[in-house]
Length: 342
Ligand SMILES: NC(=O)c1ccc[n+]([C@@H]2O[C@H](COP(=O)([O-])OP(=O)(O)OC[C@H]3O[C@@H](n4cnc5c(N)ncnc54)[C@H](O)[C@@H]3O)[C@@H](O)[C@H]2O)c1
Image (cartoon, rainbow, N blue to C red; front, top):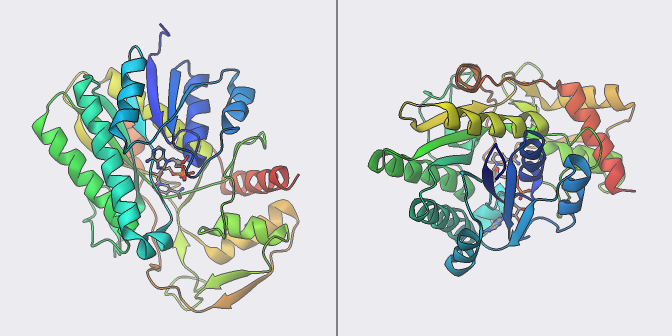
């Protein structure tokens, strides 16, 4: 067996999952991917192999389906840890189709946790989100910042998921879990070979910018320029997806090396600074030499004026801090856009 052990990665063909699979394999882990392809493509397996030299073992299976999960867990000889990415993530869609989100995100987590318990798998890393801080009013947010009412069904699934994990950690001392609260992952693998495949009109700023510049979309709308921020546009915390992927590897290594009881720990993963929408546009124009056509529109409901992370705990616990700059992330996002537009 591989010296670093075998990690089950659910949602491993998605945007963050695929970059994490590459990072795990580069670190010497054996990886088994489970994905139902609801928001990804089978040929990502080939792209992963081009980058890491190894194609992970793959099961096209749904985390909410007990029979399909039984097949995976029975089949794989030993699983040393689980990273659970699989979830639906479109905030707007979750408002329109809440049951789809509760069913997939909550049932998927419960099913994976039941199998983890049945098979004695103790190390668990969960994809949480800055959305659990809702409308926080002091910045930067630390892991101690009080959580507030979710602003969407998607946000509610992340909050409930953390509560489920807390109950499991309270009940079973052997369960060891890190819930990583991601801020805004952007960019793509620097090779230009791996990134996020567009599905419909993007929800997030970066794919919106790259698709506008490449002519797929006509213009970017900046939602609101009258926020109480330096240039009036909202501040967010953007980090390179490869930095986020590396945080998962370090999270697993932390769980493996820590002798003491771990329980459930929450860890912010962000760049640790707030950047405005207009700063992103300007920096994108500087690093790519491309003009971003945009117009200012009204505020969008549910958007908070600002949020960024205090990332000291990630450094203290995992030895993680971002290595890529905002400029790197924007350059890599543009490189990826050019790859997919061929
Ligand atoms: N991208 C972000 O901005 C962001 C921010 C915070 C948290 N997150 C969380 O990180 C995780 C990964 O996000 P992403 O951006 O890579 O999304 P993604 O949609 O690219 O990846 C999710 C993957 O999970 C798969 N999947 C979904 N439901 C499944 C199920 N029931 N069974 C098996 N596979 C399933 C999809 O096919 C997809 O490949 C999600 O849990 C998301 O909520 C993402």
